[in-house]
Each structure stands twice: as C-alpha cells, then as structure tokens.
Image 1: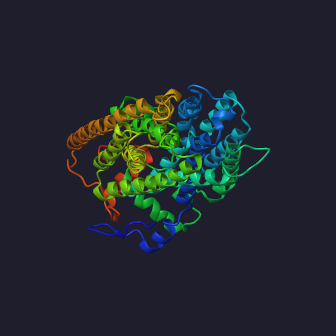
Image 2 (image 1 turned 90 degrees about the horizontal axis):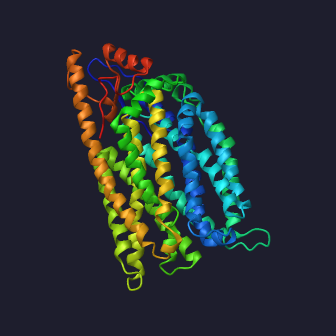
Image 3 (image 1 turned 60 degrees about the vertical axis):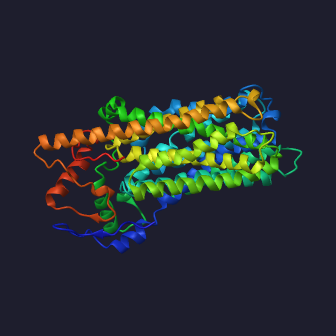
Length: 498
C-alpha cells in the first residue's frame, strides 16, 4: 500500500524521495501481521457458531441459555481486562505484547477441544477472551502511529475485512473437518484443535515480523524512517510514548465524545451476536442441513469483506465517516426487518437468504467507529485509554448480544431479531449526536485559537492527499505537540473530523 506523494508548497521543503518511501514503507510487516492476527482472532470466534452445527451443544450437555453464556463469557473477560489493557499498550512494546497474546489465546482455543461440560467450556472461553482483550485496541493503536489520519480508515478496513475472510475460512474448514470420521475425537473437537494449534504457530511469526514503530522499523533505511516520522507530525496525535499519564485517563472519562463512541460501538456488536453466534442456527432454521448451512456462510463472509472495505474506502473518499456509517447501517436495518417480517413457512428461500446476507452490512460499523475514534484522539495514554474503552464497548456488546437469543426462540429467533432491529436504528441516532458534538468542539477550538492570537480557520493537513513539510514556525509547533504529548483537548490547533 503506497503512501501519498510528498510535495513541497510555499516555503515548504520536500522531505525526501517519495518513491523510495512508497516502495519500502508500504511494504511494512505491521500490515501483514495485523491482517493475519485479525483473521485468526475472528476465525477463532467463528468456529464456535459452526461447531454448534456439529454437536457441540449436545456432546457437552448444554441446555437453556448455556450456549448463549458460552458465547458471552469471552466478552466478559475482555470487559474486565480493559483497564489493564490500556496500561499494557503504553508500557509494553507491541513486538512483545502481540505474540504473547496470540500464544495465550491459541492455547485457550486448543483447550476447548478437551471440554466436556458447561463449566469447562466457560473456563476455556474465559481465558480465550482474556488473551484476545488487547488485540483490537493494539491493532488500532498501531494503525494510529504508522499512518496519517487520511490513510487510517482504509488500513483499519483492510484488517477488519479479515472478519469476512475468517467467516469464509471457518465455514470451509468446518465443512471439511466435519466430514472426518474418528473414534477418538468429535468433529467439533477437531475444529477447535485445528484453530488453536494454528494460532500457537503464529505467535513466533508475529515476533519475527512486527516492528514497534516507524523509528525502529527494520524494513526502512535511516532516511526513510526520518521521512516516515516527518509525514506523521501533521496528525498531531503524538508518537509512541511509554509514560502513562493519569491526566489523559481523566480527560477520556470526562468527555462526552468518549462515551458516545462507547455507545456507538456497543450497538453493532450487540447486533453481531445475531450472525456471529446464532447466524448458522438461524440459517439452519430455513430448512438446510449442517453441511449446507456451513457452505451458505461462505457468501456471508464474502459480503462482510466487501462491506467493510467498501465502507472505509467511501469514508476516505468522502472524508465523512458519519454519513458513510449511517448509509451502510440502512441495508442492515432492511435485512433484519425482512428476517423478522418474512413468513418462514411460505416465503421462498432466496428472499430469506438475501435478508440474512444484507445483515452483513452491520460489519461496517466497527472499523468506521474505530477510525473515527482514533482520528479524534491525541496523546499516547489518551489513545490507549480511549481504545481500551472502545474495546470495552465491543466486549459489552458481544456479551449482551447473544443473550438476546434463547433456545426457546428456535428455530426462528424472532424476539432476538426484533431487538437487533431496534439496536441498528439506535446506532443511527447515536452517530448524529456525535456529529453535533464534534462540530461544537471544533467551534470551541476556533474560539481558543482566536483568544490565543492565532488564526481562527486552519487547514487540517492530516486529511489531505499530499504530504507537505511546513515552514520552520509550523514545524516547531508540530514538534512541540509531539514532545509535550498534548491531547486533542490541550492542543487548540487540533481539528476534529466527522
């Protein structure tokens, strides 16, 4: 992925060869690492729903809401771990933290193959969630310190797009492994063992490939590292910093925009329980057998990937994440309404499948909200805290979503689907409120600039296609923001994006 051309303008000076930086910087292993681990993380979650088709519930004696609780317990662990996650992201280098998390969740995943009852499943899934807890905030944090704000949505979309790839992989792997006949292992045990061992093997590869940040990137020359650091100054969100500041934590806690993003990310993740945990069971309720149901999840995974990449591409082009988020939520509302309203006994299968596949549009929510949040947060500790809070919202949504569906709703699950419909409508309302809030914050910063003797209107270079170096006075101002680790609230030249 190439970087924008580096140009000079006015009293600005070129910061080096754009071609060299594009060829080397764009080939960074940080992208490949986050892609692979996101794929594995979602794959690990997806195999739970596909394993339910192959006797997991029956062989472990799950009754009532126990399967829903097994689906939610990892989110409970993630929710509880977030305060520690915010601290770890700041204090532990990513090259150490990421492979340790991958190794831990791989061991937990493989251990599920040895579970024989509700209690053991809960314990294994709890530790799985514990080790996965820091993944999403760490991936987003890395994106924030490697790319300009204008480039972040597409990068986040690409590794979030692994949701769809993982869904396809889980469906295909479950279909294939489900045909294995063994006197020793059940099909669902083989599936979990395969997924866990694959994750364990990935841990040393992550350590080998990942770099902590641009300043120490092994795939760049010294000159290219300098260029990379220079092009990021316009973000005004700071660089990697290992000093944990409680004042940043307080800012996050007191700002309404923090809690609006938490609310926004809770909603689509509640809705995702309909497809990620109960999706295959809903499709099976259309009248398909377990193998047909597995294969029918492959197009759903393809839809996820297309939706995620397309939504973030649109957000990059339009520079309006809020409008794109609302636009992509509407098809999810239509699909959910169709699932609820269509008569399963008389409606034809194509209409039901179209309705189910339209629900894949809900997966545009997470990457857009993540890019929106990280682009509007400055300060190392504040970013890690904000991302951990967002992850807590993801976990809270993932925790509560499956509980909307109970076994007595099978096979139609209409009460749960009705609740998800209301959730998607609420997401649009929350996005509108956040836009109004950010516009107000920009007006407040404009007043601060005028009061400080500066120009009220400024250009946000972090959202432009070209990369320019500023004159000496502006360079000094940008360097001051980095060295002082200023937050978006403290820096009156910070421009909020919506």
